[in-house]
Image (tube, rainbow over all chains, first blue to last red; front, side):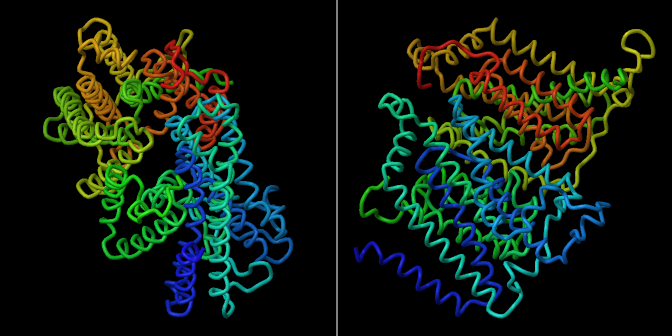
Length: 337
Length: 301
């Protein structure tokens, strides 16, 4: 019991130190990357434990992010006004699908529920006809492309290429107020910790065992009398809900959300966080999201051209030499996956 | 509806379909054999485009164009052979990992192109006759404008498809490819070196993509990301086509090309892209096995 809590304990202590000692810029980055960690843990559930490779997680990240952004945008405005970019593109009324998100409760519900529902419908349509594997990956990539182009082309209602930015309030609190950044950091940390605990329990449960069984032999699971389709759909929806939450928190910390975060390239980069950290391990994925993104921040500000070569090489090396990721280097107490 | 607009879009659909097909043929052939998708396939288009640019800037005119086709085919096939033998062969029976590793290759190739040729596209000096267009004024097809470059694409596509069909049905290597495609283990048991068949098919597919790159270069500037804009529809063509079937791939390229072009009469490009995806998802509800599917009693394959 002590051993099991040692690792999370150290992390929590480090996180507390971070809040005190890091510069406000780095603390903000850490909070953003912790939000990414939520999405990464979702990828562990579907990719590591269920064998579903999704190259479209950016879509669900974006749904959560845009829902949050629409709410914050509307909350920052006096009643009856529409966001400035809409007026610049010649719009006079708010698009109907913006209106519900004026309410904070609806927005918070939607930023988890909307990605989960979209993901469940999409996954059901594909998995129901027993299309999977590489085909599924390719279709999700097309989904990411379609979503990003749609956002860019609807300049008047989505902010187009620039996305949504300039938020000032969140649930009645001033975003730039004193202590707000630290507070949001702690909220993110708590959400991540809860997700880590919850997913850990989920993967240990009967559901988790069935997911791994489906990954290793889908037809055998059918022969045993289980239907793998609802399992896969549920796993995919859970991952999407986490991605939505991740996108919403990211949007709060970064102060903007744009198509550059949701398209084909960012979606596939989300997979590399998990590949590097370890696709079977929740902690590994979390670490991977933090390491890759901090490395990206440091390297691309120093030598911008180098970053893409490095990411490319990482993809090749990790997949060929280190399929269990960094987590595979840590000796396992008990083979759980 | 304006019939001239409709006719023009139908013709455009055929030329878009030709590009999808040229990009998808290699993917589909290798997928049928090895069950892997090369995400760097789009960069073979890009490579073909840049090779055409280099060739035509040294030797302009028709001779240059013919030479560019040869150079692009060989160049892309060589790079393909390196990817296949250095990477994909090592990842056998791990299709999802192959996807990610080849995506890494794709990133590196794109960045390399950006460093060598610059982020802005390069324009290829096409022979003058390719910039002309044929206008049909009367008869049933009145109002149709056919740019020569697009006619050229159709010609290239027909030649490639014809050549490929002959290769697969009339030659010994074609026989080996079809045998490995049908039953890999059995083909290996009869003495066919399936690894060499893999390599040959992969090179051929990459070469065809290189060829498609030359054609793309005639239509517009070659940029480091030129492959990316065609590769996602090409992936959808493979998903819809059916396992490794040339006929299936051709039909699905045709369907998707026509949908892409015709939907643009009514909606803008971005909605057209969404419609394409929605169509494919609906299509697999009806025929999850693809347009043309090989009959097999295997459950796991």
